[in-house]
Image 1 (cartoon, rainbow, N blue to C red):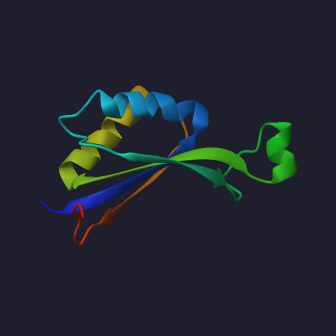
Image 2: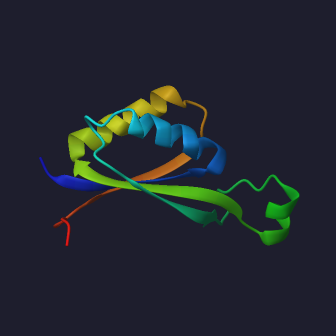
Image 3: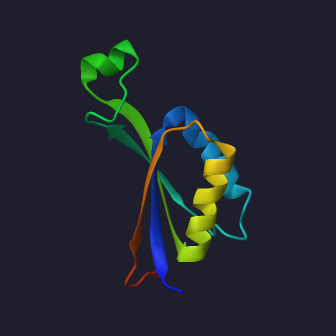
Length: 100
């Protein structure tokens, strides 16, 4: 089965819970990278006054790479644990990955 990159984008208040879930499953998530991001566009709900003024909302992006089956298992776990959270995701094929 091919390797894929899974990217998740979510509000900061959800991110810590998702990070904890991923850390609790080293059998399917060997590691991930979390970075701050800014959500822009019509699908981003701006709630706080500071978000309305700035025109974007703070977000966290989580990225990990692994076998497609494992990444789909992660998605199923997140969907089960956080059914009402708005989390955007995408899977893309990885040609090569490693460590230098």
